[in-house]
Length: 119
Length: 113
Image 1: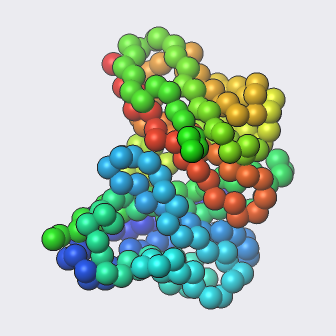
Image 2: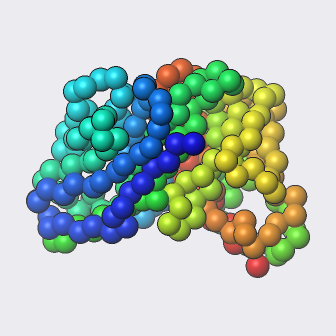
């Protein structure tokens, strides 16, 4: 079974600086999706960025980018120019390939990293 | 835009009581999911559905039942609540197909005493 590990329970960064959150995963599949979700104190899960494994180019969404290392099974999230609104719990998730029930997107989540932004 | 709506937002139950959590989505998504979130464990899949009238077990299905009688609604039932079911429950939905992102509700905090 696939597993996702976030080894940093908590991280903090000064406002306007850059921070990188780590994520590793274990799988025997060759194609899959990886996601980063943000969970602010409001509790809602918000999609930050996603990456398909067969695409070598790292995904970017404004201040958010990933460093996807397929051979190392690593998927880190870089937040540039950190803002107070970035403070949240961040979850890395792996999307398993299609199951017998066609196409059901069962996400496997990591344990989360709580990010604090210091003003 | 309502998106995914969960009711109730909070609930306290006594051991052995039953309850139903309601999830409604207005995006015409085919797939719906129930997850639970516990400290230090991320989100774990309880049950999911790929269409009206169909459901399937996820990673932690014991003690829960689900129904999807209408495409837009996905119900999660606890027949006899236990303290181990104290958690935050999230409903999510998505379009069918490879790589479509999940859209989440705001969660229900359930405490079983």
